[in-house]
Length: 408
Image (cartoon, rainbow, N blue to C red):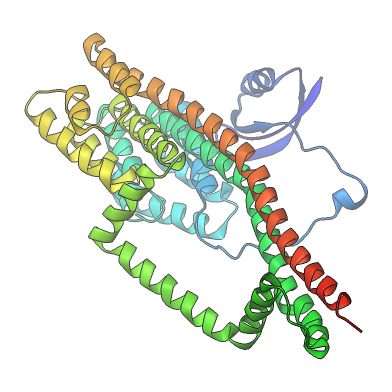
């Protein structure tokens, strides 16, 4: 028997929190419903930690805006309340009280006021484009028109959860390689700016001609110590120039083309874009958004201009009655498996379901490929870092040996 923390609301909208004993989460939800409550969150309480593990460190995050996690929680709780038969304005009022972050509380309160003034939920959400993306607003609009807003919000919850899970897995997989890269860079910098100058003073007093590798390293060390400010200026200018170039349409297109051609990373970039395209389009179509409007939204969320232009060609084909699979095939940017699955979806009249299956498949492929890449990247970084440090050490030893071999 486990304990589950819950947050629920009663028929009058009062928020209740507590702990309930149950064998599993579904049983806990059923027991709360038997009490006449509407479960909003049911989760196992986090285990208590002792010693140093229980020390709470202050948060280093200075971001005050709305996080993707806040949007996910809002969507899930709104879906739960509406599915339980709670009116929209009452649901928004409850969510205003439930919001833990001040910014989210302010936005939900503003949405509530707009709805009470007679606006639709989609119109109220559209007033906050930085929080609610176009896919969110259009799905809500379709849900309101079709009278299935609770179902649409449930699909949005699933969509946001999948996107968050994939993003978190990729970020987590890259943490260790980045730590290795930073450690190697810091080690070499310390060697060049702090350790080598001490050897340089000894070598200069000896007056002996040093091996080429040692002279090269000592020159690089002197350059870094004397002109570090120039290096920072050059790096800043390069960063500004690259950023400005990537903000131009031509620069963005060129960079997106390069990303698709990079060895190993190009295939991963393509799979991420295909998964995002398929999940977004499938979710929109399942929610009742018209095809052309859905393609317009998808074009803006795939994150790659090359594929965005391909989707523009798909729109032209759809207008001409060619469907989706055939125009996608002509673009040459989508994997054959994705094209085959989409074609089957069109033939069977289950395009939305097949698109979700395509997204699930390529999400899995992305996870597996990220694991493979990180498993290769970690030893590669260790090897490169070890070779660089070994080169520095051996160069210094060769210089020391050359001094020791000087004739007396």
